[in-house]
Image (cartoon, rainbow, N blue to C red; front, side, top):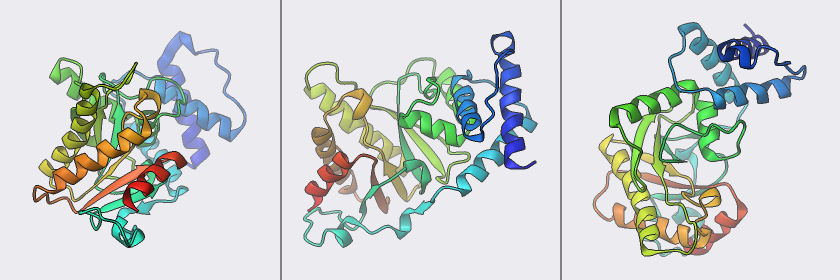
Length: 269
């Protein structure tokens, strides 16, 4: 199969799986629109087993798509100490500030900011990090999360984290954490919960002997935590953790927005 044939196969199989609800759906003619449709169908799909043929073709499709991306090896990135020569950060030689797409990082683990159900984003083509990670990893990620949550038997608590395989992503693992949601004013509890998210992720990485971890900006954006305060909490939590003889060699602060890059830059300069 070529890439277009894989795309058409996956769309048709998912439409068949939805049954009468989508049997009269008109598949768009353009390749770009069909790619968007596939992602939306994957986003909507409830966690459940998939047959081996579907998984094989899905993986081939996603891996071919990933070849078109710019994969960034975190070992090739400059540290904070190399970029900001006058930085006073005590762990500047283990920290990296990187602006770009976290799903394209070749790293031991990337951090996903998720919700308490921990099953990914079910909103078709939503632009949140949870959706992006699940869409590029493949449907196996949602099913693994589902198995974890069923075994646990209750919603994931704020500030905690779980680790899964990364499947078709260039990272080895995904660490999912539930950051706090700011509904009104900031409180000590919200500060504590955000710090806990960073510490929980670092502990999981350490427990699995991982040497590198890339953090997104947990709880900012849709969850409403102010960017400036969130950045200071993140750096303090990471610094405190690395103080305790951690074997983690590299912590990447991955930002996507200019505002977050400027905030972290001002912290490190």
